[in-house]
Length: 173
Length: 242
Image 1 (spheres, chains in turn blue, yellow):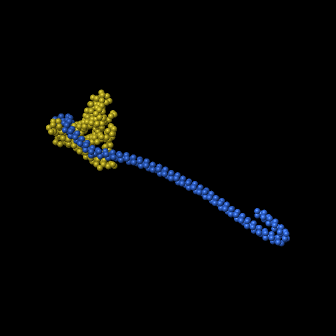
Image 2: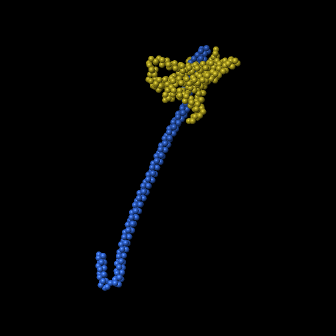
Image 3: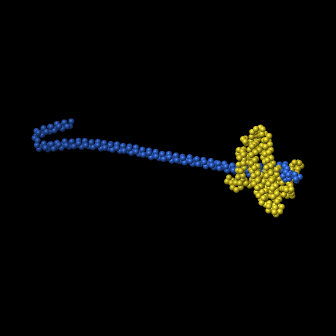
C-alpha cells in the first residue's frame, strides 16, 4: 500500500474528503476575506480615487472661477475708468458752457449798464442844456439890457427888443 | 526507499467507502486559510485615505491583481473577479511557502507540508476555477452565447473545445502540484543528505539554502501563474471578442 501511495506522490490518489474540505474551506475563506479585507480595501482605494478626482475637478473649477472673477474685476475697472472719464468730460463741458453763459450774461449786463449810463448821461445833458439855455437866455437879456442901457436911445432900444422878441418867438415855436 | 514517510490517512468517514481524508492536508488547508485570513485582516485594519505601512503593501497587491485582471479582460466585467484573484494568490503563495520552511514528520507520517503539494488540493482549486468560469460565462453572456462559443470560430472545433476544458482543468491543477511537490521531494532529499553525517551536512547545506530560495521564487511564480491563467480562462468565457 505504501509503495502504491509513493508512486502517485506520497498520497492516496485523489481523496474526496480532502477535496470537499478544500472546497468548503476556500469558499468560506473567500467569503470572509472578501467581507473583512478586500471590500474595505477596495472601497478605500476607490474612495481615494474619487477624492482625488473631485479634488482635481474642484481645483479646475476654482481656477476657472478665479479667472472669471479676475476678468470681471478687470471689466469693472475698465468701465469705472470710462465712467470717471465721462464724468470728467461732462464736468468740463458743463463748466465751459457755464463759463460762456456767465460771460454772455456779464457782457449783456455790462451792455445794459452802459446803455443805462448813456441814457442817463443823455438825459442829464439834455437837462443841462435846457438849464443852460434858460440861464443863457436870462443872462443874455441881462447883459443885453446892461449894454443897451448905456448906448441905446429910446427908439433903438424899442426896436431891438421887438426884434429880439420876434426871434425868441420864432425859436420857441 | 527515498520518501520513507507515509500520510495520516483517515478512511471511510461515516462508513462511506470513498470518503477518505488525508488529515495532513486537512490541517494544512486550515492552517493556510487561517494565515491568509489573519494577514488580510491585519492588512486592511485602520484603513486610511493616506495609506501607510502595511496598507501600502496590501494596496500594491490589489493593484497587481487588478493589473492581471485588466490585462485579460474588460475591467467592468473583471471587477467582480478581483476578490477571487486576490484570495487565490494569497492562498497559493502562503500554501507554497509553508512547505519551504520545514516539514514535520510525526510517527512516520508527514504532517506539515505545503497543501499545494497534493493533487487533491490543487485539482480541487482548478476544478473550482473552471467551474466558476463556466458559471460566469453563462451569467455574463447568457446560455445561448455561452453555448455558441463552443462552435466558434468554426463548428469543426467543437470536440477540441470540449477537450480543452478538461485539459485546462488538469494542467492548471497539475502544474501547481508538480512544481511544489517536486520542490518538496528535492528538499527532502537534500535534508536527508544533510542528516546523513558531517560531510553530508557540509555538502548539503549550500544546495539546501539555494533550493529553498529557489522554491520561494517558484512558489511566488506558481501563485502568479495560477491566478493569471484563472483570469485568462475567465476572459475566454466572459469576453465576447477573442
